[in-house]
Amino acid sequence: MCEARPPNDPTSLRTESQRRRNSPPKPLRRRQRRRNEPDPLEWDKLESVPLVRSDASPESGEDYWVDPTVTLSDADPGKVRAKKKSIEPALKRKLKSEVVSPYSDNWILRAVVVVALLVLAVWKFGGLDTVPIITVPDL
Image (cartoon, rainbow, N blue to C red):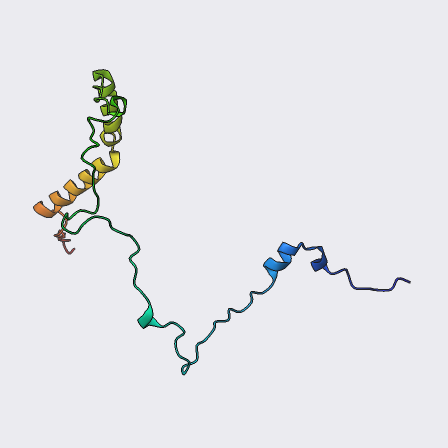
């Protein structure tokens, strides 16, 4: 007869990364300072230094300085921006039609306007706020 034995442990088939991912997280331990222990930093002796050094003088009122000897006219003429080219009229019409097209076929807006007009008409002329009384003769 065969002897019953437990199956192999499936965790042995896991990789190291799977084993680490499935392990419970370790608790975060914070270092607590004792109340009677003095602060290790001596705040009175520390020097305050700005993060950004400013070389501009306070009298100038500006945070930057431009060298007057270097101007745009002295720069390389190839680096100067070229004038804007005019857009062709056909291209301008095509661009305008592409921009306007989503708004010209706006059926939802038209439906909202129609419903709003109907609501205003009923509210102004009072068609649905009064219930008609129908008299039935007794026989």
